[in-house]
Length: 151
Image (cartoon, rainbow, N blue to C red; front, side, top):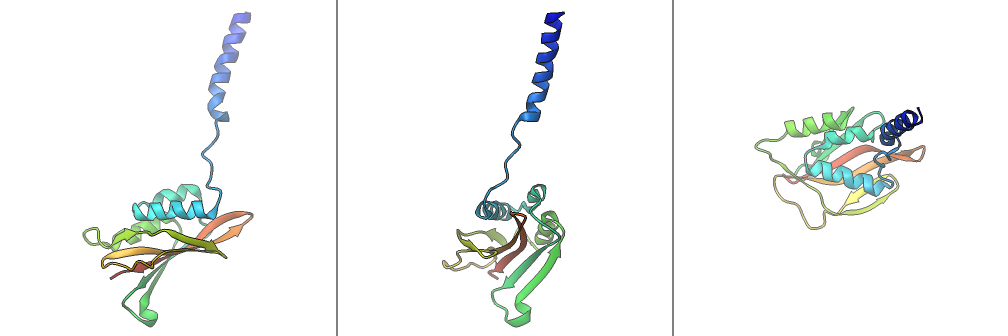
């Protein structure tokens, strides 16, 4: 009987170990979150970010046309998820162009993270220019992604 009890206890313990395993940790800083968004953007896989629940409400995608002026220079769309935003960006592509590129992160401050575009831009490339965010209850949420179209 004692052996049976020990066997049952070991089986129950073995089954409960995955429950105690540490869940994947969230990125701790906004810089880490923004770097993850940048990597997903360049890999054309923004949809995978939906599992991290980085949006409250909707996210705004702003594409700035580098050759246009005034009102015509900006294309703005709102989405409920990163997956929808990714689908829209892909629908704008022809033969996988424009390509996507990110540069190094300059700084994150006062709700905005900017990327270094000082090296210039190329034709047929959509650059990640800025990501804006809000912090609610100590947790950052992405509110907008600003892109620059190299035309």
